[in-house]
Image (cartoon, rainbow, N blue to C red; front, side, top):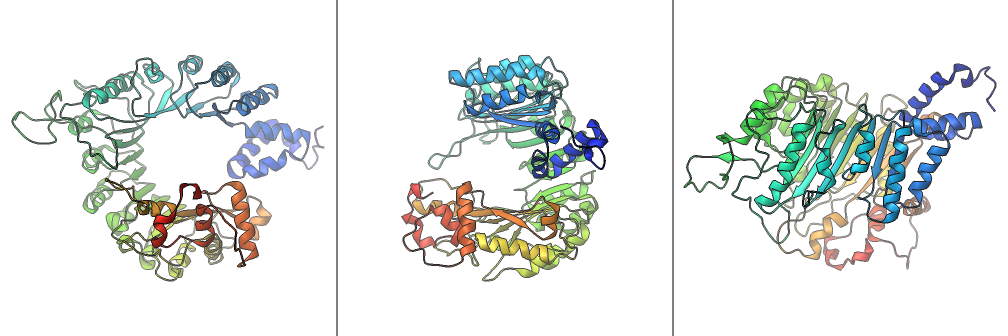
Amino acid sequence: MAPSPEHSLAGLGNDVIFIILDMLQDESPGTVASMTLVSSYFYKKARYSQHRELSIDISQEIVTPKRLDYAANNGLLPAIRHLKVGGIRPRTRAEHDTLSKLCRLIPSMSGLTYVTWDFTIPLEALVVIQERPGVRIHTNSWSSHIFHKDKNPIVHLRGNLNLHSLDIGTTYTGAEECLQTTQRLKCILLSCPNLRCLKLNLSLPSSRYIIYSEPSEYCGFGFTNGERPPPLEELELDGYPWGYWTADTSSNDPFRQHGYPLKGREEDYWAETFDWSQLKRLSTHYSVFALQIMPQLISLRELDCRGWDHDRVKTFHLNVPAALESITVSSFAGIGMDGLLRHGPKLKKLVIHQAEACQGRWRDAVVDAKTLRNVRDACPLLVELGLDVGRDGSWPYDILETLATFPRLRSLTIWFELGLGHNQDPVEPYVTFSEAVKLFKSIRDHSPAQPSRLQRAEIISGSPPPIGLGLTAPSDFWPKQNSTSFVCTVSERDDEAERGVFSVVCPNLKKEENEMLRKLDAEGPGDRTGLSYRRVFEVALWGPAPYSEADTYDDDMW
């Protein structure tokens, strides 16, 4: 039964109500969930809004069919705008049945505009979606042999008009194996005119025991005669076997490759032939290539240049013909104050972060309070900030109090050092659940504007690099096993937010473990003799173990 329209949302009409619910779903999903309890009238409308995005897992053979039946039987299929399909490629009969059920229901999703498929999208789904030219597809394919057989579903993407975003990752050890990937992928890049986002990682295996070398034969795409993909808006280029031609066949140049069809460097062809004018987001460690295309990046808004040397970072930021809104760098010394001042008026997101090094020099690159105040003054629109913060025996309250004064900051990520020097004890004070609560509260309490605009903070202890080559010892795993993080989130309820109510969870723990963590923290110190927890729980509760205990861990402790 609908509520009386007098002094009620019901008097606004369905269209306006759905607009309000959609806005609430974006800003406060918990509020929309609460509205399902108000009345049957608002229950139906709130549930409709909640189904704008539907996430399912094909491998959940019992839950997923029930979710699909619920949506179909309650008239919620037309509400779905974004369909997310996760899990693995169907293998069992039940998983294939679930996929078939989903494909039968897609035509009834009249509001559908985007499909995200976490594994390679199967032909059965492509056939259904290609009848809807307005629907965009994102799909992934990550393995060591993604094109090992012609029947692999990725080849069905050739000529697809719905393909908008593609994430390809594979490893190879020889040229022939790599060519199986690049030549089929080349056909997709040349035949899908609406592809706008590409993530590419074609690389050698990373092994602890074997060091692989690039094959001497060329095994890339081999674009020639003006061939190029459609204009990209996003590019993540993590790995690619660049080609290089030289007339000197006797050369021992390790980068020379037999079979590259053009003279010179393949990067030159990409830079000169591809259309880079629409690129909005670039993430790559190929700094020389990025500098080659930099003059053409008139639409660029986001840049991730971690791993570049300082001179190239500065050159790019000072000369790119666009004002950036998001910058990710390894250290502040790279971008420098001049680069930051150039982009500061438009900058909304800034991340300054690098993994810890075993030499123990990580804290030398952290930002001090004075520099942080300069960042604040230069970037008045900053809403998202991530940075490495040093400490040495006490919390850096000057840094924390400065963070509190960023006028528009809503999301904050802090990386604290764990300590990776050889035989080095963990850096103190430890990042634990109770300390994360205090740190988040302190930052919000010191905000000049009350209540603080800061809504979320992730406080991280440890950012270890990948385990190196060679035989490993149990102690090599100590950094990862003793790293932890906490996510602090302000309540979605306005009345609770005004009172400063927030929650803290450790993403490494299960739900029941987080509840136990809160319970033990509330009880305070006490005698817990005889109690045994998973080591990851103990790290969150008490902090990292001494390095001297690195050889004593068992796998089941994690």
